[in-house]
Amino acid sequence: MTVFCGTLQSLVDLSQSDAQAFDFCRRYTIYNMAYGQLSHFWTSSVLSVCHSEPAVLHAMLALTAIHHEHSFGSHSPALVRSADAHYNLAVGHIQKLCNTGLEQYQVVLIVCLLLLTCDVLQNRYGTALLHLNNGRQIFQSMRAKRTNLRHPCVLQIPADTSSIEDELTYMMALVDLQSTNYGSLRPMFKLVTDSNGNTNQEENMPLAFASLDDAWRYMMIIYNEVERLVPTSADSGTTQYLCYDPASVIQQGRLLCHLSDWRRTYRNSAFRVPSSSKDLKDSWLNFRTLHLQMLQLLAEISIATCLVYGDEMQYDIYLPQFSNIVSIAENIGPMLPKVTFDVGVVQPLFLVCSYCRDPTIRRRALAVLSRAGKEGYWDSRLVALCSREKMLFEEAAASYLHDPEEPLTEERDLATLIPRSARYTETWAFYRDNDMRELDVMFKRRKLRHGQLQYGEEEWEMFSKRIPAPAA
Image 1 (cartoon, rainbow, N blue to C red):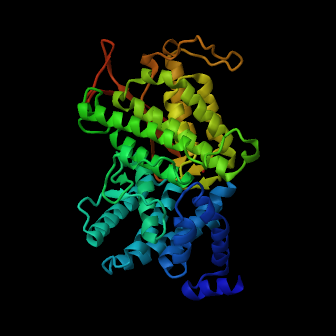
Image 2: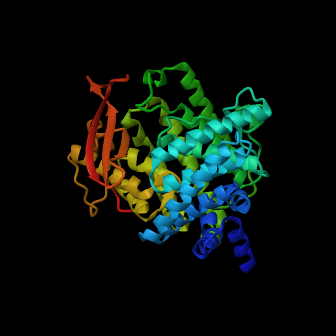
Image 3: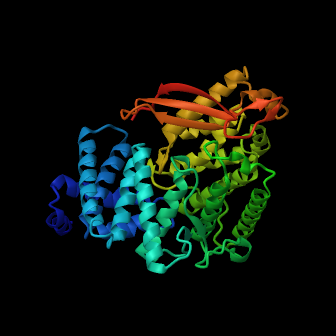
């Protein structure tokens, strides 16, 4: 270890405290960031490039300081100063690299992804979006120049990430997908399984997945298609996404078939582990098996409801799926680190809290969120706060008072309990200023006229509220 630290210090004149921080990075930060991923971007590419590129090393030290602070849950001025100092040094180095004509574009993209991670873990989503858009532009232009691709926005997700290029492809696809709830309307890249850009899963889906990584790769491609189809109120000309749009109906049918094919292939896979196996309850394999089950439930709800966006009554028939998502999250939540870059339980639980109107299931989801951490763009504290506000607002509008001692009976009609007039579709949250002490939370829904939902750019109504932001 003495020789190792000395080598690093001779490269960029690391202080003793920074050398210790890098040791923490190698032992903890790298592995927590990579938790649940098929990619070796963190454990292989980033660590190896740290030894030769000061820009990557400084960006990783900035991320380590942020990770260290969040992992132990205590505010440290020294760690904040260290994060800011290394972040700025990384920016300075990357600006010099960019002036060379992007000959080292892989290094530039790695630093871009590391700085983006620093920003999302600190909820600086605007700055993260700048890094992401720069990374998208560099990645797209470099791929077009090197391979003469006719469609540089189409990404093949490799079955085995065996090079830095493969790792960058996977990571760009991952952040592109995560950003759809944090500044991007939908993914920029279209994900495919082969180099010809073929997305027909009936042709590409194997008879059995080779591994859990393989199953996750195909699920990621399905999610990419879902996010490219689902509209939001921010879309221009939202009417094109109504259920009577033939192209959208065809695409929805294809996605439902893809998901059904995925389930069939998963059942045929030899590696599949019964989630009820007590011997594997705390194992990594069982965690990933349960996590995949939760993601396919999330995909089922998202695909089935995407073309009648804004009709909140459609979600009531998915109570069994919502309940299963929460049950799985209760099981695997304790296995997750406090800070990671991959999607864990927060995004699925946000869907439950947003669209499940069963008061008991909603509160179970909020209880899991209260114990979760940061998962890439998803901050459990922020999600829990906004979700609780929406739940209480809808229940107050419905004149419902929850009594935990009197659980709902199966015969109770949710449409009567929380009627359409009390339900809202979208949740938006904005920090008031750079201090991040206050949030403006907004709930949006389609207007009702004569009992019918209104579709169009101006046919939305909104309720807003200012609340204290979650403590750092």
